[in-house]
Image 1 (spheres, rainbow, N blue to C red):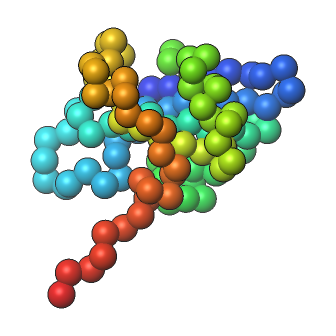
Image 2 (cartoon, rainbow, N blue to C red; image 1 turned 60 degrees about the vertical axis):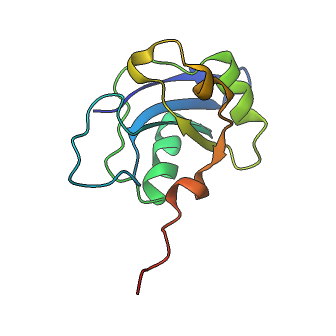
Length: 121
């Protein structure tokens, strides 16, 4: 189950934050909490529309249960300033303080996460 949360903005919009397994993670490798996870932020009119936006992109098994890990103020600012309102970056393992490389990682548009590598001939 994906950890995440939401925050309702004064404008009525909602920012939803989810930690999901990376869709580009190699299969056959052991996965677990914190391994190959990404933090996805979605700006939408309500929580249902935010999850629908992710499902329409091919992330089918996306659910938000509870509000255990709501978006931080920095994450809210990042998603509000992005034109698509849908961004991601590598998640910090075990919700700990991120290490230096993770702190300097910028937010990426969702297209870069879902882009499929070219077929090998």
